[in-house]
Image (cartoon, rainbow, N blue to C red):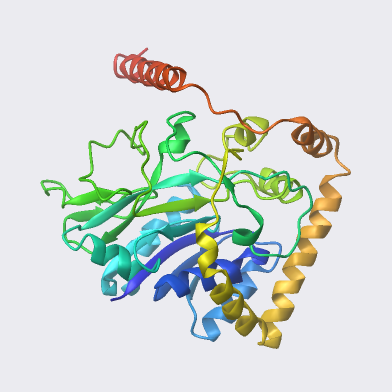
Length: 349
């Protein structure tokens, strides 16, 4: 079974080896990685990993009408690896597919629901856990505090990513799910519980029930306070006008319950990282990337905006989980606002 991961990266050098090692361990066979505008040697690391036969690396400079991630997906659509894959998964380097079925392998997930043509796997927000400094240690070891299993608000808590079987029904790759070809029937998909996929509203699966029985995506969107500054300076790949700021932090810093389940893979992941680091060239590139990030953090902390961002984050408490009724009210109100806005645009307002 060939499982292809497609992703984009910019200035992610310290995190690449763990992310590749983890996904190799759970059963990913092919990686198609697009890089753009790197300052920390991410592109050089990906070149070295490509030379070692670990992944396929494509440079993808920003520019033009499309955002960099959509430019990458357009290029990926034509790549031979997409045609050769049995299963496809579009994801980001701060997302780790955590499978609860069986031994936590992709094969276990597929075997648990053999009739499923795809899995809409929900995000689970992992908070900062009060960690301030950036250190070169595995994310899955550091960040173990997460949102509760049932959470509707903020709305990003019910977003998902897709692992799906290669099908002629799909016309294009997508960030959250593939686009159906015109006239095609939606294949049978399931959600993170293994239940038939309900109606999808945009990129969310609204629910106030637990939704991670079979799998979840551990979303380490924040990391340490120091590392978050680098992310804030970089900006979003798809929404370049949206700031990564205190509002971004507040929507994601859930440290409500402990979740250590992904750590059953930690020893195997550390062994794979050690094997990667045995390559002198790759080890040097990794260490250079760590050094670049530490220098960038020091530079940002001399600038007023980033100094205040770090200081205010340290003052904030963790994000509160609202009462269920309040979560539902806010979600419904947001949907009403969006529908009104869309109607106004259709009517020329």
